[in-house]
Amino acid sequence: MKYLFNSIFILSMPFFVVLSSCNSKQINGYFGQEFENENVISVDEAEKMAENGLTDNEVKVKGTIRSVCKGEGCWVTFTTSSGKTVYINTLNKAYSLPLEVEGKNAIAFGSILTIEQQKEEALADGYEEDELDWIDNFSITAKGIFVE
Image (cartoon, rainbow, N blue to C red; front, side, top):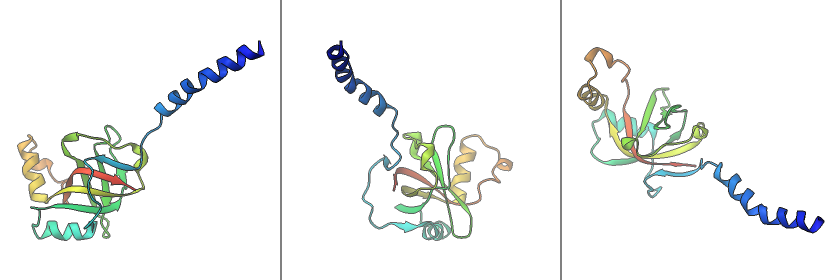
């Protein structure tokens, strides 16, 4: 009987290991497109680029994740040194981030959108002009995000 119990226990171990690993979430590493972590700029440098209309090139912006979309994980926010919120939206909601990334340092790779560009997109999506007061800072549409 003891032999039977030990055999069942030993044979069932791989099954329990697989089950326990299925519930683990990735909270570090790449989400979306992978990229080289070189030529990274600060959130404040990205803000200056947006203010000067320098939005043609892709950027890699480093910041601390202050909040995460609680519904789909489709956006996170960084904060500038002056306290302004910067939305980092996932490109076409092609990937999502877990809620557990809040408070972690991250690098977002994508394109800067100025306030004016965001308002144009919102109007094209059917928003009314008087509904756009919430757009008060640049944002980034991220192809990928690296969470440290």
